[in-house]
Amino acid sequence: MNIITIIALTFLFSTLFIWSIVRFIIFRKLKKISTQIKSQHTPNNKFPTSNNALSELEQQVKAWSDERKAEIEQLEKLENYRKDFLGNVSHELKTPIFNIQGYISTLLDGGLEDKTINRDYLKRAEKSVDRMIAIVEDLQTITQLEKGELEIEEERFDIVALAKDVIDSQELKAKEKQISFELSNDPSHSYFVSADRFRIRQVLVNLVVNSLRYGKANGKTTIKISDIGEKIITEVADTGIGIPKEHLTRIFERFYRADKSRSREQGGTGLGLSIVKHILEAHGQSIEVMSTEGVGSVFSFTLKKAV
Ligand code: ADP
Image 1 (tube, protein in one colour):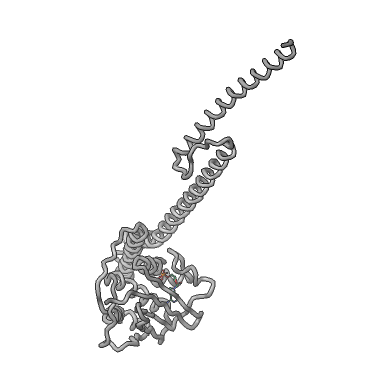
Image 2: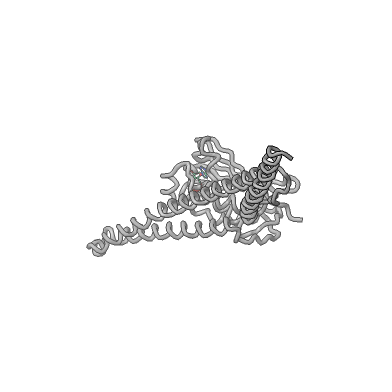
């Protein structure tokens, strides 16, 4: 063996030796990264064993980072939702609170002795308190519905009788607005559904109240119930102001209003339709709306037919 062969062999063996040490170190580092990824619950994250370890690990890292990105986006969405919600709630509560404060201050500053305003201001303050109660109650319902805490207790009941009961309960309000009610069904013919009676009453009340709130004097609110096979469909139609096309897809969002000033002036919280949609979704059902500006709106929802 000459000296050149010895040098070449020494070089070869030391290169191989150094390469295997480097490989071992890299492999250990990669394993650490992989274990780290594994601890983040990434699926499909076995440590690569093939020679293609680097590219496999690269894929794992990419999948892991995509997952984190989606998580961050979701958290950002929730954070924006939380901010929006808090902003909306404080905005809604601010008006009645400031109103009450104004009336009380005026009364304390001598208005209490002024017979021309004292009763009137107290009545107005009472109206603002009622408004705050309505907002808080609607907020409570919507929070329960969104958290899935609201239990739906299905029972068999006649929706025609319920519609009649809701109409009776809103008769006075309708008279004030010069709006008449019509139940298109024969009240003695029952349509039995399987649903949470209390919650469906809330749905009907919200729809009927809206038909009065956005109705026109000398107008009409009609409730029609029909059998469509496995389901019963209930329609609440009005001859009111209608909803402009561009708002139609958004009116079921919480605090969304097509006509802000009219809603507030009429005591609306901007949560009614959102509650309606949640209740129907909790029943596995849906609600549709058709509306023509200046002509009127029809809200229709389905319920499971009782056996
Ligand atoms: P609000 O308390 O403001 O009535 P809702 O969630 O019940 O809130 O309704 C959302 C918005 O949809 C209302 O502000 C109103 O602009 C519109 N809207 C709902 N029902 C009707 C209707 N029957 N006719 C016209 N507009 C309606």
